[in-house]
Length: 188
Image (cartoon, rainbow, N blue to C red):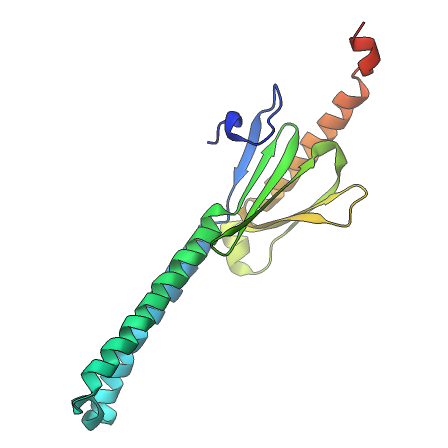
């Protein structure tokens, strides 16, 4: 679990309630796509050996295929690492004070934004499809007061539980703010 001292602009007494990443199915899909792409040249070579065996026997074929396969497999590795970094570094942190949304876009661009809990107006969970339902993962949308932008937690585990937790924290924060004495009274 992430320690609160590592969060930007942490406040005294602020505690991490949820630390979320996308569901592990995303990594499983990424590995499956990568393995299928890696197996494709082997399947093509096997099919060519039956359909057109003379093509593979040509003298220039070894050099050309070595260059092509090097570029192809380097592209697959690059794709895998870029997608894995995007998966791993997309995080959502819910604390007792705010929601922090950190999204990785490509290899060298990261966007971090935060929403204070009192400004949370609505939260909804969306689970689409049999696999999502069976494994209990989906999207959570959080709408803030006065802003058109909403936070989108993509493919997180237990989206309904996350939604309820955020709404409960926002309500608790609003109640705490209502019962807090004004700052000019505290100073006296």
